[in-house]
Length: 89
Image 1: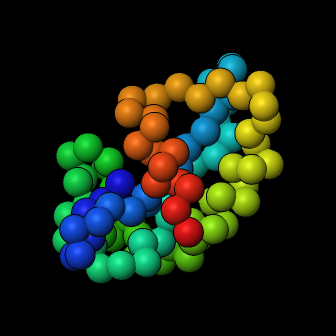
Image 2: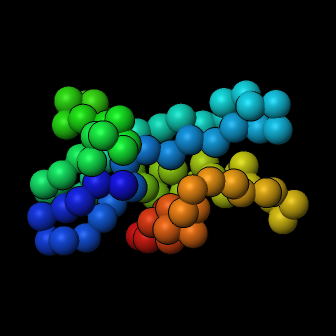
């Protein structure tokens, strides 16, 4: 997540691994609003990282829907916050 000019947050990176820790998805997401803080110390993402990114949140949502099943276990830190961010359109 990054902080935007209007005070909102946007998802800029989505990763997913399988039960063997093999990477299934590792995508940068183009923010739709001007970013004022990349939270690089937390996200590891910089403005330069996002310069040529064309992947939208809708693109990521489509890919996630293909990966997630009713038996998928989602694990993460504050994952409810991240899932809420991924659900935005």
